[in-house]
Length: 304
Image 1 (cartoon, one colour):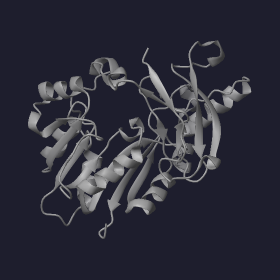
Image 2 (spheres, rainbow, N blue to C red):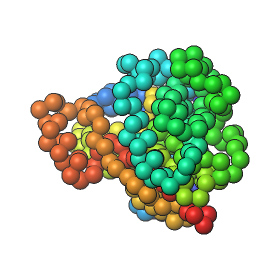
Image 3 (spheres, one colour):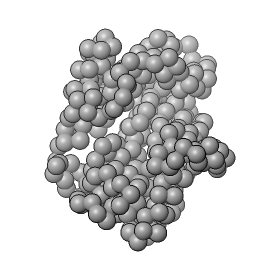
Image 4 (cartoon, rainbow, N blue to C red):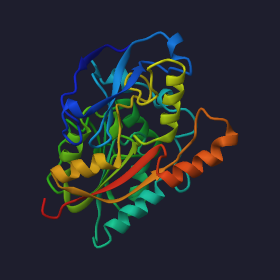
């Protein structure tokens, strides 16, 4: 089991609101809780939601002594299923969105943060982007180089906190499913804004704090007489530390110099419910924008 330090949250990471704006949702264990969390052993942290921007986070934040305690594992142990080939259509929508939002630029430079197995780098390269990447796990980086022939000189072994690039180098920066893993996502976005050309785009896919299924499961836990919640997984795979609302980015962008150029909510896979109710649940989540994933495209201010 990893060793942690626990740090109190003294402001909302995205909008800067004080603790008085936080609402306690419940407790989250350091393991999968199942449907009977009162019978599970483990330690738990509080999960809170910012009333101002809808960011969901653990408070205190559990910070591992070593990043390898979370991510120093083989890709096969982190992901299950066939995720190592580049499937037809992989990252195609996002690539088309990037070109649409950057349509007046003759050449395009891209940065993939948390490149993982390098699949996004390959797809962007095939689409004509000049692509670089950052990956903090040596095992993931090695697999990207071995499996997909990524140029080692283009895939930096680094955290975003330690990485450095020239100012205004990139037109497009993608986080994929990364921001929810970072202890300071706001600072990561602000650092990327320095690397981004004016009018450039940051793409991020994050868990939505408005997810209907999470709310329904939390209500089930309440009916069972517990104060546990299903939001986040700060101390077990996949190590999610945050869930975001659209207003999380609206408030943060107003503070640091970007706007939301485009966004969408995606239902994704429905877990924990019988198949017979998937169709009405999916209809409702599409209608109310309460699916699992929020995708945002953030445009850097031209004057920034």
